[in-house]
Image (cartoon, rainbow, N blue to C red; front, side, top):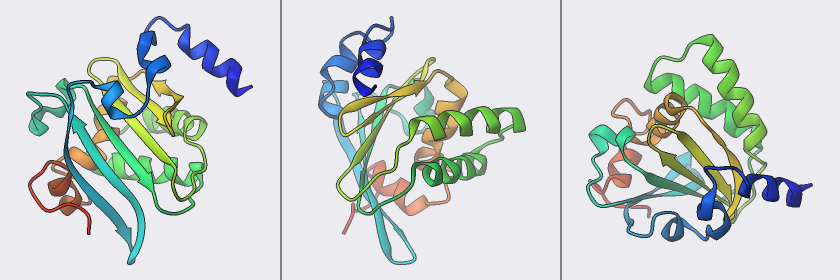
Length: 179
């Protein structure tokens, strides 16, 4: 089944060499550099390490105009449904989300986000004007072809309204990274 999904994904018109050649942010964005990194802790427990990969000219104040990748390296087991639900809660904190959008986006994320364990990594690729593409351990998971979804989703980490301002500062290179 997974193989059929990969074959189907690589035949989509937007897929091109991106899906076939993914091997981390360097292959997704050949001219990118890691801008910053941070560790998310919840009640003292390490949840994941995040890295933000950007191309030259990236402007965090207008991140929706730029192609970039956010890579999350998980440090514990989490259920995909819980990741999706928490993501939606955080998305609502950075901008308005209608009930119709919330239902659509939650459904898409529940389908996309798998259960993860220590050592897994999910990479989200922001594609301006198109939406977001996701990868698990360098294998394609799928996409949400909605620019507004992408703006809210990546806003979890990059919006000035984030619930984790210290993490944002570290990701955009304005503060020291994970310890």
